[in-house]
Length: 341
Image (cartoon, rainbow, N blue to C red; front, side, top):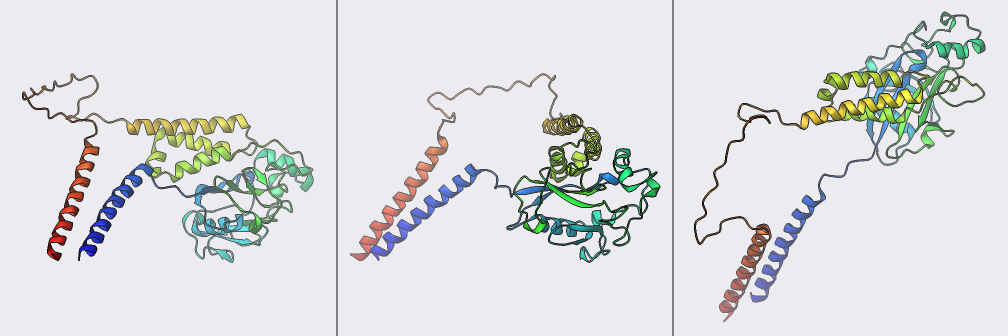
């Protein structure tokens, strides 16, 4: 009985101490660790369409590659697609192509690229490829939708078109399924009208300079992923700055300074919104800054007593609790010994 009781009380005290330690540790650790993420977007700025999918934050899963990220996001967003291990052949609303979403839904349902190109094509794109394709006007482009109704893919409009993907503004030479991704990467799937030279890489065609749009893409994605995104993007200043950011990001020949300025303006608008949200709004029960403060009477202390809180009260409370546990344990042991006698 004595040994059993001693062991029981020992384990009880240890358990109490461990519980206290764990609770303090959890509070000290703060918020839970955030998962690793990347930014992903699908763009058709070269035909004047803009975003098929605006920048989104994607949580990484073990073993992710460019291929798995593309497949998971496009399916979830309501797109269908044709793709190999190497590259993407075509993208369409859900249900049009063999892979991806079976039904058009979400963002994918809104995809509406033209079968025939017109004045929406950026002039600098037309000027860059017109001689190679022997075009006189934009109406001379071939028809699109070669992979299915509403689809956008390789060889639509001309033999120089197709989908290319960049990671942190770099177009790799390996297949999508062989390209790993890392936290913080900015992945941009972009449609090219000129074998990629209209997106940045100069493969024998000196078209025009392109800006690095990774940073502005990330800020846009973070704004859309915020917990209060609906309210944030409904704010007039933030909405205007976001629209300007979209315009800068979708301008194929935008200068780097213009892109950086649009990014900074969006960040400033978001920061101002956050600051305004953090400021308490005066209510009838809470007078504003200019109101005279209500005097608070100072209590007269009772002679011979001192009820003021002392530094370290919390620590002393812990000591008292531990002492109480120890006394209870000792008393229990004494009682057990008497019982044995």
